[in-house]
Length: 336
Ligand SMILES: [Zn+2]
Image 1 (cartoon, helix red, strand yellow):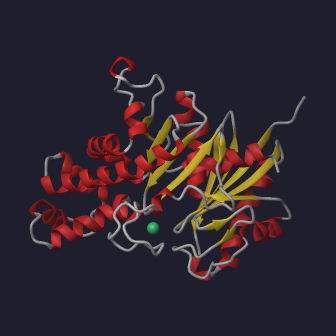
Image 2 (cartoon, rainbow, N blue to C red):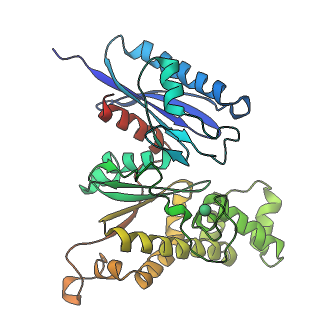
Image 3 (cartoon, rainbow, N blue to C red):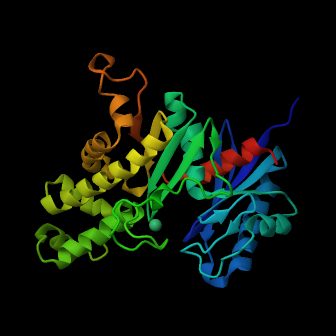
């Protein structure tokens, strides 16, 4: 009888550190979540990570073989070393050799990967890719920033040293707002959840957005979800914010479609509930800016001069666990 096997995945977030045990037939079996002690420094965070991993290993190794451990970390990151390079939410972590530090703490080999790449990987292996029978995709995650990952033939495309797939930092408007990466007008400063809130605050400050001003009055900490509710109820200013998000996503995706000519582009993250609000301008812009998309538009038939091959741009299948699940899946497949 062959012994059952499982993997351990870690999601290192700016706020929470999550460690999970996974089996293909059961999915994520257990998740340990604790606050990420960023202020306490790299040694404390590495120690917390090792402790969480060892607790799950001690529990599950009694009945199954551990196939691998993978850690999802925010970028920028150099791979395969897992060297953190000035991650914006982790001051003092620049240069941390995550793979070596956790590996030494555990006495076990670990794999490190970019968290947005892992979300894309999960979406490919068990999410939209699986559902549509496709093994290549680009995924954009609209959250605090705009994360993105490229999966080619079922494998994460890391590029030369782990920095591939930074579509969120492609320029949309040459003279746009300053991004944390140092560039101006990145997709990230226009289409993230953070950008939606910032845009709403700007419109409120102009004194010409009464609906948004009333929202702020009733709830100072209003989130993109409340702005989306206002837009759905018909508020023109709130609608304009999401229409603009769609336009910028359309421009960003047009570049990806022209460069890669894949069948599948998945959009996920916290803003995805607003898909009906931003999708119309997204597709309008994508059709305008990408002839590759126009020729492969699912709504254009072959009789009308379209191609039988179609480019699908769709909302993600998985929720906020995608990155953690991707770490578990990578750990399971890498069998380190
Ligand atoms: Zn940027």
